[in-house]
Image (tube, rainbow, N blue to C red; front, side, top):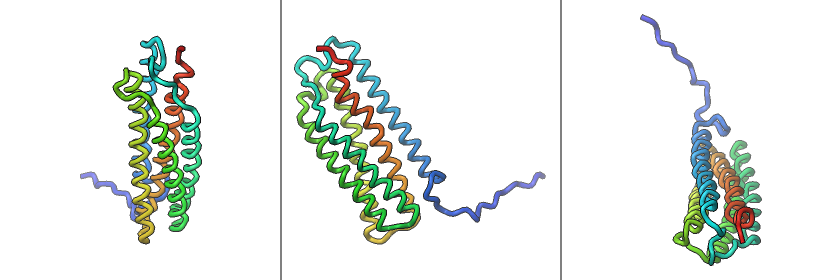
Length: 204
């Protein structure tokens, strides 16, 4: 009978606040899946364009440029707060985590508010031809992802405020930054598609 082989892992830590943690890789895998979905939507946008003579269709106003650009700027700057929180989590700095998450949350909420104003100004709905369907799908799905992560960020802040900052909570803060980097990064091609696509591939 062949004896079984075992590996002694008792010396390994229960939780690691780095890219070796299974939860970190789980979030990266989720980002890949989400990113694929958004890439399909971008491809759909330009595919639908090929079947239409005018882009946007008649009666649909051209997207505004100023508010979406300001929103993008706030999202990019909000990554600084995420980075601060992630680095503080590695150092077990409770105050730094709260500060970083707070900055991230505040700037992100401003960006979402700007997006709401711009979205409200659209003069087309999801039922307004295929153009309306694909543009609303892009905006809706990304906004839902952003809102979900902001709820998660808020929960983390509350947990830290009540002085629960153990290794698992610190890992949660670190992983939250990965999700936020992805949401901001994927918004760049989505922003170009939504607000500059009609100028790039549109026809008068």
